[in-house]
Image 1 (spheres, rainbow, N blue to C red):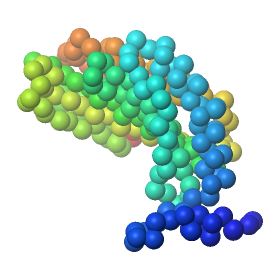
Image 2 (cartoon, rainbow, N blue to C red; image 1 turned 60 degrees about the vertical axis):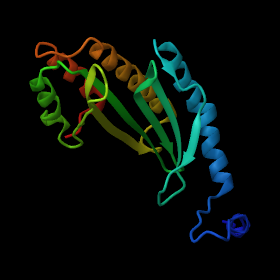
Image 3 (tube, rainbow, N blue to C red; image 1 turned 120 degrees about the vertical axis):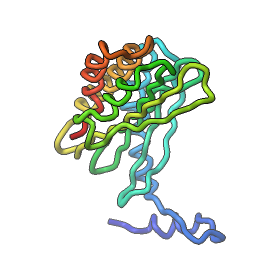
Length: 202
């Protein structure tokens, strides 16, 4: 394999910096094309099909990794606040989808409901976190869920990943729809069952 690109890219680096990152431009171009032409149209269709505002322009950046890895970000908003952030990462060898769901809860929410969500054993591998924001008028609590799922390209096809993306966005929209009117002791079980589809981590 030719290594000419290493010296060529190194010459473009800012010599005033103490550290630089060199990326193979051909690999970067291939990964960006994969994200923009293969997966972004799928993501955009799902975002458009939701009832919410969404990020309409793809944002791609490189990840700090042992191999060149490019990430595509996308979000859903209710008004000015994001309630879901997705990230699709691809490299030559593998892919990963990362999900972040931000659950706002009214100040009058039963604390036992909050404890039940935070302490649920099916989230113990990657437990949700709690923020208390006293500056907001109604949404006093925010519980953040995080999940990542990925595999090598040899294990699953691009079609499998497309279906994974569709389900992921759909479930996060449904989780937010379910929670819009608050979560009570009577409904927390149903909320958790829905959230398990994406966020359970043993």
